Image (tube, rainbow, N blue to C red; front, side, top):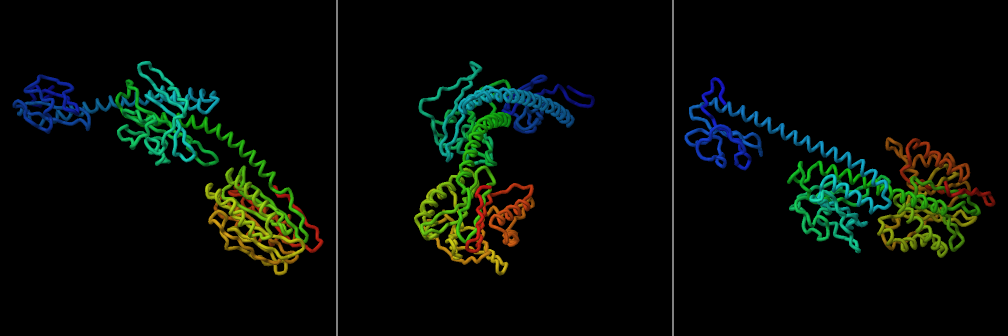
Length: 543
């Protein structure tokens, strides 16, 4: 143990663990058992000097007992011994970590391929959830893996699959599901913590740190050491939806991770399983959703008016083009109780399936109301009364603009329910008037009574109703089409028919946003005053 120039007489070396217990002893012991006495850097033991050096926090310590006359060189020797010991321990830890990582990678790779094949053969979603739970329990040796799904409000969770991994049998056991579905409060326990942090994909927790109270029927209620909850998410139409969650409880001890809490490797393995099952179940849901959208699109196309009606003294044309499979825009020509025709456009917030359903409901209600009323404002007041509760519940609103046309009469009543202004091109001056309104959107306030404003259209004048999709059509740089371009387009096309005006507007919008998809539905109705006996030009309402 000595080197030339070192006055060290039979030093005694101990390697002492973090609890103060002697792990190794080299040389000849001197004095009492000092396993629990190494609290200082230098203390006297049986007339000798004990020099203690911590290898690293939480690791073992190197302790040397030398004669008092050994001098400072003994400390240098100790430092070198400690450095060697430290290097050894670090190397052992790295090898251990590499072994754990290698095993985890092999487990994950094997799991990924096997689970992908097995999920592909699952006929039902519940079967897919069970297969995923079994695969994860076996690969990660989790004592229990459960799969739950949330209700629409994410307040209640339903248990879909429950699997145990039993060490004595080194295999899994699928726990039988009771006749009545197991449901519990999703806002409490581990799920509640996950729902509070929507950006997290997985959340490991110690059982003792679980937020209380824990729902008695939830899988983590029986956790002894650890809980890992992993979100099952899938994106539909660019919107990420939370389908459910994996709940992993405790670990069955193995050679690599005995007594350790859940770690990053466990989280990544569970994340991979969640992603696979989400893709399987989400793809199935997306296919069903696509079928519903296709059907909804067909229905919506069929309920748009085939052709604008013939109204003496007016040329009418309308067109609607949706930005997605199902749109929220609506145009129609309604026969009113006093013989007038109500030409209208409406825009339900959003342009998805829910918006399309609201639009269909609005169309049905409007047709009934128009047949009962001679006041255009009363038609929209009645629509609000009929649909306000539905609009509030679905968090939707509707804007609308309409023109009431009497055959052969240039006096036109305008209704505006929080909608874009009606543009009126004046043939005599070449100017375009923007006629807005002060009434609110439908669904914002209950009990609103909508009014009308009367304008007179002379021969050659053109009135234009349009939705936001026209002026808000944008390019990649963010610039919008805007009302000024729409006014210029209307002015340039005003000498043509109402159908020509539509062609010009749609052509200008498409040319402006070329290469960029429309972000909203585009709906336009053009009404041109023509001479008495003039030939109106009817235009189909479908694109």
